[in-house]
Image (cartoon, rainbow, N blue to C red; front, side):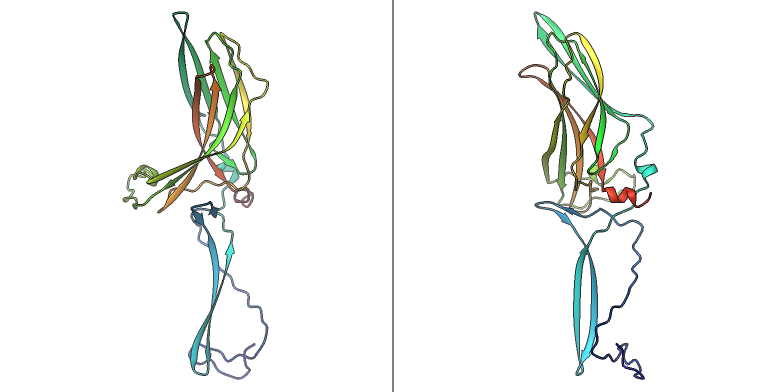
Length: 250
């Protein structure tokens, strides 16, 4: 490509007409930030760009080419998918009046780890204590995505509270991505039962930590029908990572 016996002048080389491939190595930082993300109103995209400077007839010209690439932070599966020291548990109850007495239905849900992989199932332990006069026949799992949009920057975080706790979002969009029923599970009156339920996570989902403009979080919702008009709901936060992020470290 370069002309032979022609010295470099002004950081430029004399070249001949040719078609040449030049290999380059680019070392990425350890902390890359959030993974690529695309939605209707928000997106995170990584581009790799090449800039060529040329001098033709004494005039400088520039040629730039960019291409979108997928850049992922590597998560150690033994750490990211490690069980929590104590399960993350949430409990709520509702009281219903029946024949001048109060009846209590209690719902408890817990997960043993908070990080899950997109495209794979997650598992949750659900316990229902039915002190009511009617059987609980409907147990539903929902995966909800919440997108928080910010206008103002977060103040300096010297206490390690996290950007989500230091400012109020200007907009919050919620979307239920998937629903699943715990089939063939009924809890009779004046009884209790515990079951491990499964919910398939759709592919292409990923959590995004709150940054300058927005953040994406996921919540697992468990909902039971106590009666025709009364429902009991609990919710647990979860983190979803790209499957390649975990497999790269294995």
